[in-house]
Image 1 (cartoon, one colour):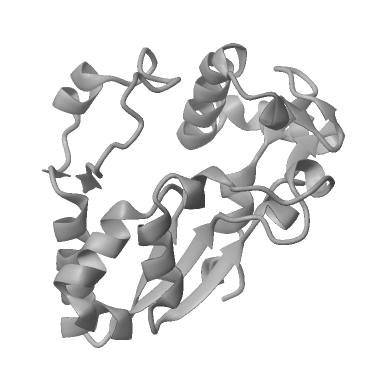
Image 2: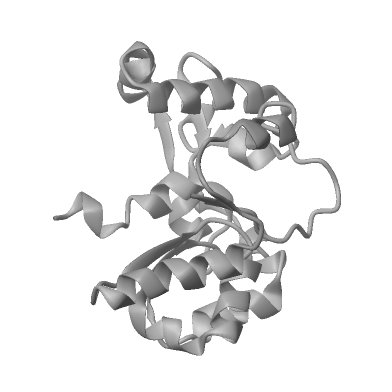
Length: 201
């Protein structure tokens, strides 16, 4: 299933031309118009089977805070993995910390999420801002494009996104500038996803 969260941007997103309303209309799975309700429903299903639900938060967490406000009990059944914040360093593992977007985009919701009584692991810019794929590893990733539909979709999205990206920091990672043949952009969210227990069964 797919869920639509609240938008606080107020303008078109960078990839609107790559995946827009027509793509959503053609999606064959379930689409929830209210992400908070979708979170509560998913956690309810897990709790009924005595299972915890892992929630990966890679954006301003308005829907997460809304779900927590509506159903405080979900905190007992959720493990949160998030990308957000800046503690001692800014982008690329250097520079001064600053108000990272996933926090600054909705500060009250971030405060609610980080204060909740659930197990939470987070990847701030100190680590996520220094994550980049380059050299041999990037070449291996390109080689997988013809073998994996998921890798192909991600690389197609990257190819569409890179020339449109308006932010300098993601395009200039610790291993050099991002391009389509040698190095990725900074992969903030992927670093957070690597903290999931699925990688350490």
